[in-house]
Length: 347
Image (cartoon, rainbow, N blue to C red; front, side):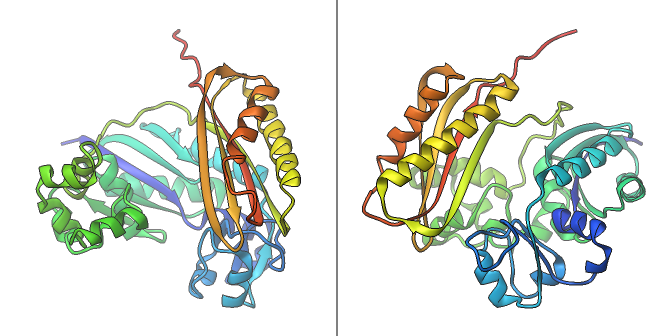
């Protein structure tokens, strides 16, 4: 009998795979995409092919570190329009199925389906994406979004894996807490400091004690994650950007704070131009500063009222950057504008 399922479709090594389609001679070679594609410059890895990952190269790693770990890798610059076009083709293919599609980003989406054979449905989706785009994907099957998302990791690459209430603890209980979607290294470290190292230990922890140690909202929420409890409804709405950001990495550290302010003003103007294109005002502004050698901090503020005025966004960004220590050398600056939600229209 058909029943509801959540499928999580995740493109395998998406950006690297798209680049290899453009340059077939790179197939089987370690490929690293990031920055301007020059590992002698400052920048970070956007993605690495599986061949490069075998050398310990991962996303957000400095390009120079990646080059030391994998000196024979091919380095390529980021080409966002190319990836956006490939992503659009993938999502169009998924929407051709009898399923609700919720896009999470360039390379992943949830599918809400009703079927008596979710593995067969997943295999059909994989074949369709491959035929339409020449890109491989992995599919996680779950009875809610959390389990489907985590299941995908067990299916990679090019596989299918089912994770439900029935096998949740058999699969997850002994895994570290950061194997859960929603718990990163920092939170896992806090949990470890409380004597909680595994998903099973977190699931068995007392909810009131977690609330007292981690906060009344987050503590019990982490426990629910460890038990696999999460929403199962897939929302069939197009993916809409919640924010726009611009960043600049400097090949030489900025030590003149006047220059820092100039760069922040430039980035703020660029971000305002981005949100003007969508006609969605900024409600919140954030500034990211990465001090030398690699110490990153972010600060943000909510505007008095949403705005598309570049002077207001710029003033907020300058206010935020001047809350940092002007005596420290700066290697990266970023400005982000978080927009108001798009207006929902009804037919």
